Image (cartoon, rainbow, N blue to C red; front, side, top):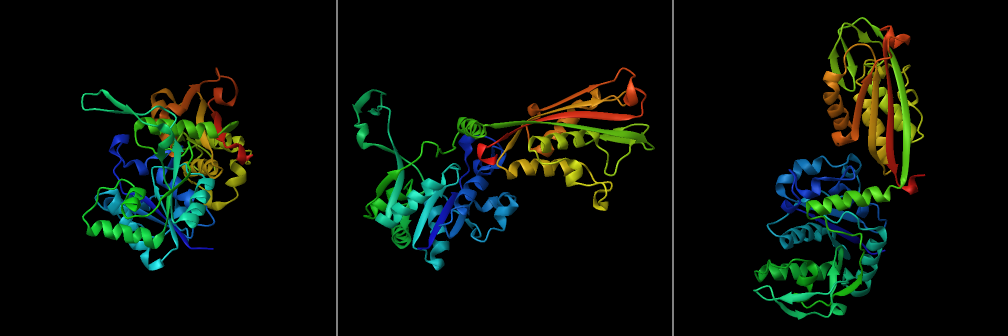
Length: 395
């Protein structure tokens, strides 16, 4: 097999997308976009090395990507990009030069939905022609306009294509073309195929994918989120229940929030009745046992443990199956303490642990009208439901 490398261009600022982070480090479907993009290339069995080009100021953000990516044997150390996309690609190619791969795929980090089939088509096309790009036919009528906004002429859409990445090339000719352009002072090429054409290379076209969108604006992020939810057609609902008795102490933990009280809740961990119920609800939606099977009370390492560890674990179990938590609903049953004053803090804490918007977390409280053990003030009970979306392939 030829040696095939990939350069993922992730040095841009992505200001049109809004937000506080460069767009490639924002989340889509609960996962950082760059992580999603890298995963697609690292999972492809025919790609021998993946190199990311990042902004020099993004080292800390890059270091926070998924730990399973950080240790991947085919993910090379990132390199700093330049002032233009062309300069960033050249930096990636120069970093790969000692390896001397046979072919290279150049891909935008902001295209996180490239399928394995698309990558395979890119590799095949590169081996066949030495330079190839994925493209889609234009379905709308396209016109040119003059400076006054008047139609100049109508173009023949049969001759037009919408170009995507990954663009695939024989490595040495592309590197030589980049070096030649740099020497000529040309830094204005918006993609590698334009540079290759300038250098005299013949560039072929192979079928792209409508789903291989480039995430550029806030609207693109919304569309991407919708695409992710649409792909998760297996909708699961789980239920959780937990109860803890009161004992000596000066506070209780409910929903990850410390609430001053004249008693504590008794349990092997911190006895957070709310988080325990949510964990069981999530695990129930996954048909993945219960909190006791994953964190047995007989294990001393969990004695006094903060229950946010248990909830984070449950969230990770969902992510590991390509899923996402859509909604959490928690009901606390007790006479005291009063939950209302702490409701928003509990919602915020649960949302933070689960990487959800607060609008996806409901917290309610009620009494049992002086009936039963909660009515007698002997303890607190909690009920929870979790709605989880999984890909059908996760069945």
